Length: 401
Ligand SMILES: Cc1cc2nc3c(=O)[nH]c(=O)nc-3n(C[C@H](O)[C@H](O)[C@H](O)COP(=O)(O)O)c2cc1C
Ligand SMILES: C=C(O[C@@H]1CC(C(=O)O)=C[C@@H](OP(=O)(O)O)[C@H]1O)C(=O)O
Image (cartoon, rainbow, N blue to C red; front, side, top):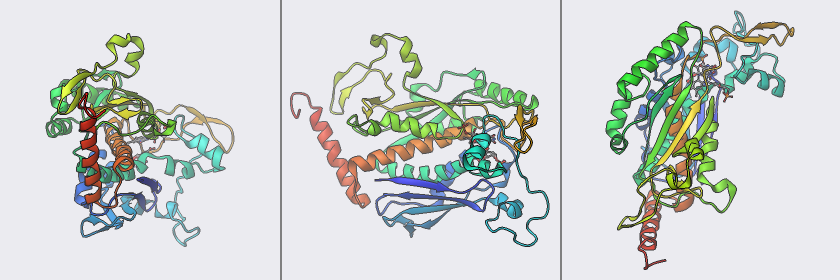
């Protein structure tokens, strides 16, 4: 069983991630993780912090000579900004000389952030004790662990990709199927856009809208789409509520800071259409199993992958920190006061799309490990091949069923 945890504060010394349950012998390197780490820092509308961090990943456990050992894999990502925060964020109280100067305490909660609820829940008067962990800085760890999960998924020929579908009021219909089917070309074209939208006209309009929001002291959200290609039929299960893969993916997406909605395939549109326009006919097909001429289901039926691409879209709300702040209350006095303004992103939808990919990789890796298990890569691959053989046999109609 694959499971993972993250730890660390936004301006503390660094971030730690642990992922357990990977087979021994999986090839891993910092270099392999670096592309995803770099993409998460990108996107027009991010704040000054991204210029400070390098987000280099160091393996501190579970990997030797470029291969997993079978134990928990632990990653460490340094917060380079910590050197500017050491006196404020250090773990030891009263280290001489470190507590002079501004302490960057936060007393006026930002509407839409975790400040108010965290302060009341944990009894923190200084709301910095809340925002440091609630911050999406934590997603750097998820992307590192997600890239490890991606390496595991590559054993099965699975590819996970994303594009930005809308920012603010600007939206577009998404790439044609032919471009989705060419992962390298899609990735290249997505990276050419400042907002990870491979349609250049929409991309330029999105950038313009972010620029206008910044000028107005405002922020923006948007929608991104993640797809997983090359999935076999049979990951996840309908036999228990918490084994349904759509439910597990939805939880994973909603756990990303500021994600407020998730849909699969036709999504909410399906509620407006008759069944004949929603469900995907089942045709006999050939050697590769039944054929489905459409994919309104987004690759899941009964909480189980059906062999079609997984299609998930997530909606991100606008960033909570406003440079023209909303009214709030000073927790020391109860007086009405403008919400705290911290250095902040204006829009982080492109970055969130990379985090979304990471969460899909992690949930799919868990589902694969449940289905095909195994202590070594060799064993995992043998189990996978056998399960593929059985699936082929069972869809040779009139034969194996
Ligand atoms: C990649 C990314 C970057 C973010 N950057 C900021 C930011 O700079 N300022 C901010 O106020 N919120 C930012 N957020 C959102 C907050 O972390 C989030 O709104 C907060 O933790 C409260 O959680 P909730 O919105 O899910 O309720 C970001 C989210 C993501 C995914
Ligand atoms: C640090 C990251 O994102 C941060 C997420 C974030 C928030 O409130 O969620 C607030 C900002 O933090 P800071 O005040 O340090 O600039 C973002 O930069 C990151 O993505 O690596």
